Amino acid sequence: MAGLTTHVLDLTHGQPADNIKIDLYFLESKEWRLVKTAVTNKDGRLEHPLLSDDDVKIGTFELVYHIGDYFQSKNIEIPSPAFLDQVPVRFGIANPESHYHVPLLISPWGYQIYRGS
Image (cartoon, helix red, strand yellow):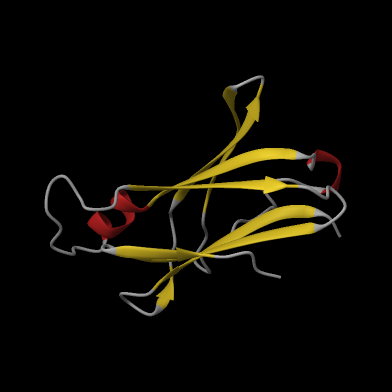
């Protein structure tokens, strides 16, 4: 099954990160075009894939995770401006027939991203 999915895990609290806004962009003719905006559910996942089988195409994409708002909602003492407010992740899709899963592990002070399965 082809497509693009993501999920977010909160390493500070050891739980899925809910209610995180995620923007998906596609690089088209040297301009970033917003494709979709979604919000994580209580499992840190999206209700639907960011891209389904028919929507996946070869090219450069960027996910922007709005984690600053999430950590402020958890009443963590964070300086202003926050060290991390938005996490941009730029990646390429070379095979539109593959499934791309992009998990993000977060804390107010760092993050890790990888291609999952």
